[in-house]
Picture (spheres, rainbow, N blue to C red):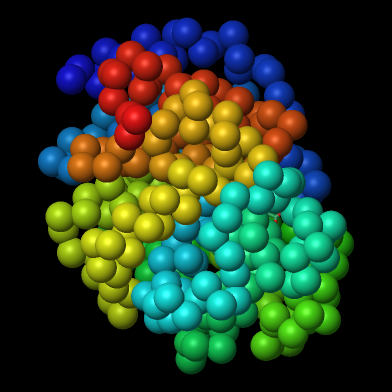
Length: 304
Ligand code: GLN
């Protein structure tokens, strides 16, 4: 497969979308990013790296981080994790409060904000140094020690994080938050603030594409079956109330973030990351989704 050629064709085709959509500005620090960016990088299970566009610039991975926090929590808790959070698609906005109330404090899945806040709480209870341990895991899975939190983005999100604070309060009310609300929010916002570029993100997703290699990064170890299941949750829940549309158009397990990043995998073959800050009304990158749609259409490679 000539991915290089396919990526350049895709880039030309999606160029008219460069100014379509709006970047997230409810996190003030994200409003400062130049929105007219696009990058894509494929890392194959053979180690080939194929890239196009703005692949060196780091961005805030935001909710893509939820794949890594889930991995860590699942490795520690195993199936017991699902007593605190579900694994059903939400069909609602990523920050829905009303759904959490209807579900009496048990979030639908670990990829909506409420679910990820519960996962953050689990990690805080289980780990001696959650901030350091999480960063260490992310660096190991991306094979890059320069990856870091962006504390300015985290602080900026906390400043305006009224809905997430409401979610955390509701979780506490229903008895599904063990730690101090403010401390859990701090850790959750830090996780979201992790910065990567497309090359690093596609590398970090490779272990989810390659179930024949051992998933073992420091203390975080998953069985091949657990990796398969994380892919299943990505497929059904990775794009919130856009998950059906994304499955229909793209057909690769993936996860989006409001920083404009997407990580996705074609199991057995490659991991891919895209970045473009302009989002559709569901909070997913316009150019990123279109690029992945064209990638699976032109290559005829998808899980379906
Ligand atoms: N940090 C963001 C929030 O909690 C993450 C949301 C997202 O990327 N969809 O609102």
